Length: 151
Image (tube, rainbow, N blue to C red):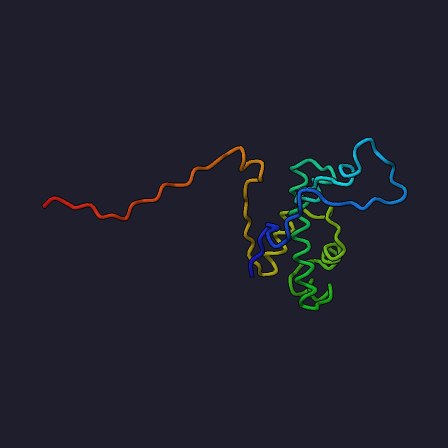
């Protein structure tokens, strides 16, 4: 089984997300239509205002923890059983299961995934912004025509 640190299975969020107005919302000077939309990224931590490097780290940790948690739940194991099977202390399993992201580093979580007998593949891709900065040219097709050799 392979685990990829890429959120390709998630549906891509639209450019803006619609927030329904409630009774307590103050009216802004902007038009109502503009006030109802907020731009969102594909990283929740960026949306909450974390610096980009920290947001990527938090997102990776969250993805790994979700994977470990869902794997243990899929096996229908108790925390004690998972700890015994993988050689991970039970309190650490409990912290993973309760989502205590601040208790773990990416390195530690990758170690746990390795102890679980999993292989980790990391895929790195340029962001949309970077794709616009670096426009790559398509390689020219190589001709399959055979050249005649002189005899």
